[in-house]
Image (cartoon, rainbow, N blue to C red; front, top):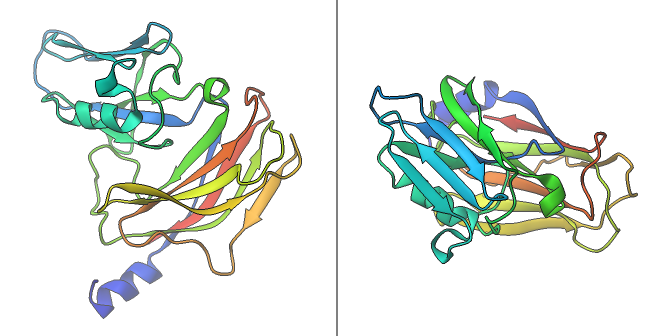
Length: 239
């Protein structure tokens, strides 16, 4: 735990944030090229109906990741494998390590983008394939964290969603990601509201905080989430 002065400074410098995903925009893998080479621009390609990720670095060395293979059949294994490569780093964002990796993303040549001070390749969920919205509430969405995260925290104030689903118990969930134990645990759940109707869960009075250095992942599980009006939005504080 930090000193009293550092905790007070963190509190008074807290920031209000809003983050939103819509159909096919939740980011599963945020990938950054960190290798050397001048042969070509790095590329990231998803192919074979979402079953193959091919990373080609600036030295033209290609790495193919077969998502149907046991070694890479969940998202956590894919993230760990990419982080073990010399030329690439990866951050899991709007997903769970336990998610089946095969056939959850659409085929595409991923365009690079400059976000939060770094050039990244974002591989996004096909929300119709997995029939879920996921959204990570985290202090920093950068691959290579620009700010120290362990001494920071987030507090969820409310979230709002609109999705197609059949009402059932526990289809709306909040998971806690424990960065030390590397575990994802359900800490809150609810039945869905009214189908295809904007619904808000409000925690403003006290908030939900996963603790220093940890994240929250919000999940809305549906039947078919593939409408232009669908979304999941979270309001939170980071400090």
